[in-house]
Length: 190
Image 1 (cartoon, rainbow, N blue to C red):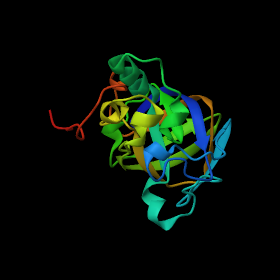
Image 2: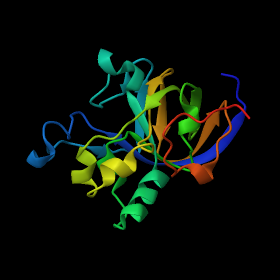
Image 3: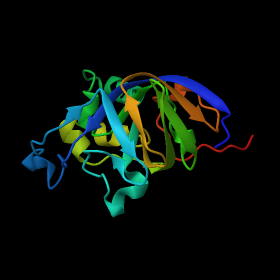
Image 4: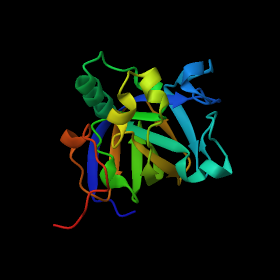
């Protein structure tokens, strides 16, 4: 990746969970599973986050790690006129502040924290599931569409740390748009 843009961001949360919490029907309630909001998470190329439910699963190699802009959750809460959401309830692995994510679709990025760096290929949107209406608030499923984050393939081994970080991007980003709902990939054409 030829580095072009460098953005200071913050890693607010690192969710590591060995099991799924949202499966079956929402009316049955979420499963009680161990979940860690880790201070750091070790990522392995081609496998994901060590200890996470998607680690090493062939069906999830291209989507083993999810990134979410917390600004999206904040905008949703404001739109729905509810208290701020617990970001961990969205079940995304890496919750960031200050990162516009939709322009990264199809791009290779580097997320660097405390001297460690991890290369990720941002593959596709992390679309919300109907569980969001139950876990966050009525209407959250629809409000989260277009701002549910992105799914990534891990390209290099490394460790992510909660706290200040740097996102290296081959495309320009606008942190002011981090909470915007984006229904399709923004065009790079003028």
